[in-house]
Every structure is written in C-alpha cells, then in structure tokens.
Image (cartoon, rainbow, N blue to C red; front, side):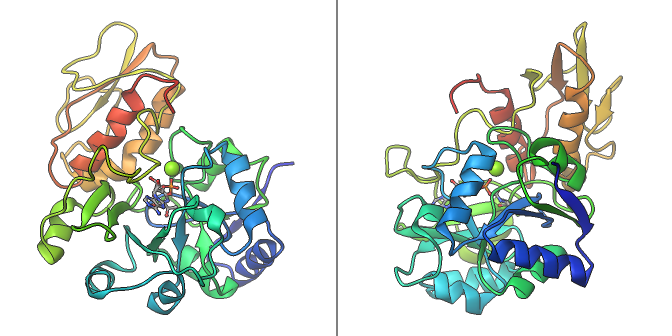
Length: 317
Ligand code: TXA
Ligand code: MG
C-alpha cells in the first residue's frame, strides 16, 4: 500500500502525523532544504525502521530536528559558539554537530554510537508544525532510498519510498533544494563537514574560518560517501556541449541545453532546481547526462559537491 499524501498546512493532518510518530511510524515532512523522513528520535525501533526503509548503512548517523533552542538544549551541550550560530542561522539550513547529552532523549542508534549529535531547526511551517504538534525531537534523513537523489517534492518521496512509509505531508516544492550545511563544533576548530544550503562564506562572516575535517581523523561525517545523490544515468561534468545520445543540463546561457538549472546564472535558483532536473533527465533515456560547469562560489560549492558525488563511480557507497 502506498502512503497517503496530506497537506502539511492542515491541523488535522499534523495531528494524524504526530499520532503516527507516537506509535513508532514514519512520516515524510517538508523542510526548506529537502523532504525528510521523520521518526520519533527517542524511539529506537522507529529509528531502526528509517535505516531499513532507506537501506541506509547503520554507521551513518541522523540529524535530530528540533523546534528551537530549548529542545536543542535537552539533546546537546550548547556552548557560546553554538549559541552564536543558532542565533544567526536558526531556523534554517545549518546543522550543528555538538557534544551529545548522555541524558538526552535521542536514541543511541540515531547517532550511530557517536558521543556527538547533529541538530537543526528547519525553516518550514510544515516541519515546524509537526515538531510542535509532536513535541519532541524528530530524526529525519532525506526521504529517499540511500544513495539516490534527494526529494524536493512530495511526489519524489512517493516515487522512492511510498510503499515503505506511513504518511507523506505535502508542503510544496522545497525552497532551498540542497541539504543543510553541516558544521562540527566538537573539534579544536569549527569544521565544514558537508557544504549545503547556507554558503560557507555566510557562516564564516559570523564565526570565522571553517576548517576542513582531518581526512585521517575519526569519521568526521560518515554520510559523506563518494557515490551519493546519484541518478541511474551516468553523469559527465564540466561539459561545454552534449555528445550524441547525451542529455545536457545547462547553467546560464548554455546553448542547446535539454534543461537549464538557471538561465540567468543564479546559484540559488540552480540549487532549487538541481535534484528535480536530475530526476527529469534520468527519465529521458539519454546515455549520459552532461552538465555545464557551475561556478564554485557561494552555493556553487554545495552544487558541485552533489554533482561530483552523483558522478562518482558506483558501488562504493
Ligand atoms: O537538509 C538536511 O540536512 C536534510 C533535511 C531533511 O533536514 N537532512 C539530511 O539528512 O540531509 P541526511 O541523513 O541525508 O544527512 C545527514 C548528514 C550525513 O552526512 C551524516 O553523516 C551527518 O549529517 N551527521 C549526522 N550526525 C552526525 C554526527 N554526529 N557527526 C558527524 N556527522 C553527522
Ligand atoms: Mg541524504
């Protein structure tokens, strides 16, 4: 049976979703970044169902979504630097990796046995409505089968996971379109673990330079597997034109593009279109998807990160 899709701005739908979560079920919820697959963070069995539904490796920990600072304090130690980040960027696409409170509500399984926890307050009325109706942290990875393209509409969720979850809340297309930026505040210096919906520069303007995680250090962000976000069709990056049989994903004034991420060369618009366009081109029967170069500034860092992972050799993840 495939999951019902209900409007995320309807109080009855939110009540029903919260009830499903209390019973250990799985609900897909809209956020400003991508759709998340939510479960009660305190319920180990519900958390285990997420890993099962997505086919996600158990060593890859989940983000706990919170309704605000008070709920965050129950889950993690919030030091001065975390407080500054929260004041500047929450609600919004910034995930903070923090020292985990051993007496906090979040199940060990959600943080894959680490003594840290990733937290974020999403900036979407659907996700926030669900968090305040449920009253408790919700773990939520992107609502797609592991390794695939993240969903930015309720229809994308239904396509990938519709028969494995209990309900989908429809909040329309995601405004940002890329997952949150993940930074770690547990090491000696703040470190960028995953580029995402807030540009590095924007964060550095508030807290100073972000380090790269030590490649040989303890698994910094276990989810950063080489092959990820991948459509079925192979990708060829930094292409100036399409070869025979290829679909062409353009940016700016790319001639003869099959689809264009942003004709006016706007990186925020390109981010919002990226995953939906990859899905559309994946269905064209093209031998490959050629992608025009995307500048590596601002949100371009995260767009290029996702494209490189989508183009990486398969079978590593
Ligand atoms: O925008 C987003 O972040 C979306 C929406 C639904 O909120 N969620 C999302 O979750 O992208 P997911 O599970 O696909 O990615 C979570 C990332 C992974 O790279 C994971 O390894 C990392 O966060 N992560 C989670 N907990 C961590 C921890 N304790 N230490 C280091 N990295 C962590
Ligand atoms: Mg994901």
